[in-house]
Image (cartoon, rainbow, N blue to C red):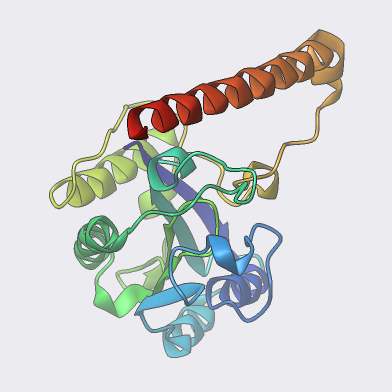
Length: 240
């Protein structure tokens, strides 16, 4: 499974929105119907949200727009790794049992956070299981030597790449996952990519082949139906 690592710098205003999303204090557009959740609960807390650590970071801020926290979204694979094929009555694809694999990933993430930022800077770690793929939200305060120093980790592409590699190494030590140096970290929480949904075509899509793609989709649907009928006929014959 592919290792995906996305980063977001957060000011004080951003932190409030992240807290609401991460702790599921409100609904999100990328949340799937409950039948498609991986677990009964939409999220699971791995490290309790610690407002005191955010208050300490805020006290160190010298500007209103200072980076007071950093959020990482870490995911392994995508919905094709965690779900069955879409079905007429289950367009999202039935979720598989994620327990063992996701617990291993969680151990690696927890070890990385402790080594990279220290427990004293870990604000919270939450696992979301109500979207297309299970993924972790990690929030930390970028405090180093008693100062807010987000640049110590995020100053330039090379530092971010090194940070991403260290995160992958920690996770890969617990569960094998693919890492490609130089690859994009990923863009999490795009509701258009949710399981069972079809992204709206962009203007480029419309100009360069959206109509052709839709025709191929229809033809593919017909072929899938014919294949299903053949499978059923074969099953009935073998049963008879």
